Amino acid sequence: MFSFWKTREWNRPIFLKLILILTLLWVSSAIPAFGQNQDSKDKITVFSGGKMDMDFSFSSSVLYGIGSTGNTFGGGIGTLSPGSAHASLNPAGLAFLRQAEGSVDCAPRLKPSLSMVSRFFDVQKRINEGVDSALTDLRTPETEVSYPEVGAAFGQEGGVYSGSVAFPLYGFGFGAALSEPFSLKMKFIETGMEVQFETEKTIGDETKPIGFKAMIDLNVLADVSVNVTSVSIGRSLLDNIGLGAGLSRYDGYAFFDGKARVDGLMSYSGQEFIFNNPNDDWHNDLNQSAWASFKGKAWGKKLGASYRMGNRLSLDALYEDLPDILLTGSMNVVENKVPALNTEGGDDILDPTKLDIAKLTLTEFIENRTSDSLSIHLPSSFKIGSSIRLGFITTTVTYATYTGQFGYSFLGQTRGVEPKRSVGLGLDFSLLKLGAVVTWADEVRQGTDDDAGRKTNLLLPSASIGFGMPLRKGLRVDSTVLAVPAPLGRVSFSMSF
Image (cartoon, rainbow, N blue to C red; front, side, top):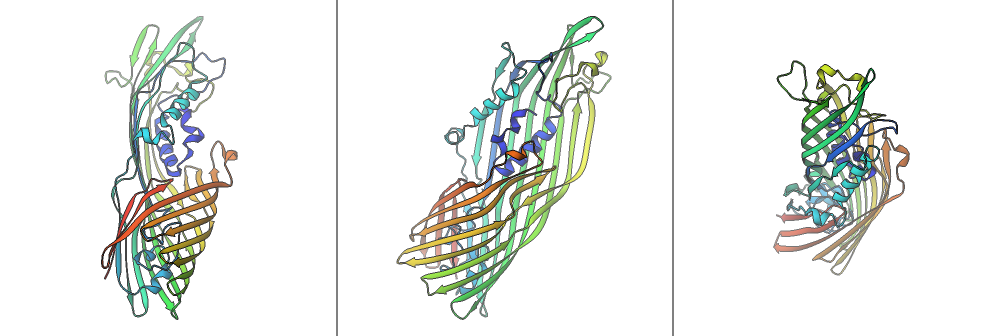
């Protein structure tokens, strides 16, 4: 729609960029691209941003894993505290399981206010700067500009997001887990946006001004999620060596539904002609709509090993082969285009030579039904780690190397990050738990207008704080109360029986 949506500030987070691409793909057909050469007669006279309400909801265990026990902090894979979460984390931990256990992860609803979010990322300021940038070439001293009034909520929705169960049988440990490593939902409503611009048309020796005015309301719903079902088995060799293997099914889903109500008028030679007028004999609809649905599945596997010296030291290794998830489906985009509007950018907003003076509000109906695909990329990894328990303190150190990327490919573009390696540290003080991970990564940017501008050797830190305590014999509660960069909050209940 407007060029400020293409600025680099909007390139992250990864899947938010995907949703914005879907949103703007179809709206842009009705609204002119703001680009102009110095000789053009086009000029913006009024831009009113209206009111913009955004609600972004997400859940993620990509950075923190499932559960909130000391094993998970700092990206740990240690097996000193075997439990059902190892069905997803490190199947070698199932080899040391001595009793059946089940666990469930619940997340409270966390939606910080816009004012709180703006302490870290000033959404209103970024949007204002984007509007200024988009209007640079067409703005005059007389141009009336009012910025969008932004209302936004960012955070996680409450609910149950993962669970696991494990039990020993005939010298083996069996486990199963359900989790949602990634989910992003967006609701976007824009009301009251107004754009007015003017140009000129010359007929013979006479040049007359032509005005165009558009009033736009948008309503967009989007949902991208990945769900994982895992089954794992562990077996101990001797009493201190454990091996484990797991198989996981990844189900991906992406949905988009958007509608744009676009009212407008053209003025010429003192007369006004209204779009969406049912009394005209020609098609003059300006409204837009789009719908897309993609889904798919893939399989991943993991192999784990652990060497334990009693309950005080473990040396652990884990290989995790994560898949690329190919989501297939269909997309339907309905456009009503003004033939004279240059929606592809270029020298002028409006080409007067394409105007039919007798039918100034004539629009062209275009419906694109396509079968397309969306790929979600997940990185594979090899991790080694060690856990040491001294008194009531357990320290876990983990080192990982990665192949592949975390991102997506859609409509000829690939965006994401390619992690190279990471180092994690977890500290479990029985009641208090601390974790930190530093990941080195390169930005992935292919098929975009700024591929050469991708960043390399990015330093991506994450951290978490949690608490845990037994409620009674066999029943324990653990929590993650603070996590960055994702404001994750989670409560885990585990019961052995």
